[in-house]
Length: 163
Image 1 (tube, rainbow, N blue to C red):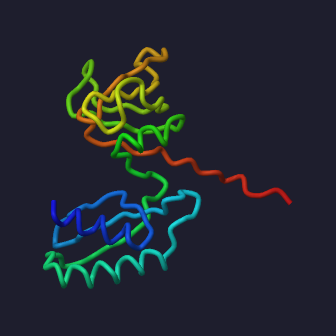
Image 2: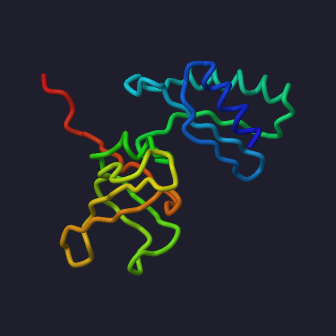
């Protein structure tokens, strides 16, 4: 937990928001960042700036790692917090639950946002509109504790600009 607090503080001090921290095999530490205003994309220079600062901080704080990777969340951004589930309401997501609901753990649909409770509290409930196996529209209500993984479904426009 100390590691997460160190990374979060350094990322915030540099003017970015922390999206995710992942530990992978062979000592890889992956840190995902974004701009707080969300409109400005993360650049290679942003990642380089955060990487240099974290490398220095890890040496001082004795945080173990072999390789550090700093990146933007990408088009299929992970959704982790209650704030994320509210922010991305109206967008299509892929949701995987920890425990199956009606013999199903994986859902793909339009996130409806907060339906009851307070954001980032155990009683918060969120909603997802999806297509049931019979093709009819259905709604799933869930809490953060029930979510194993959630990601945005990438929206890519290949039409290009008109001249």
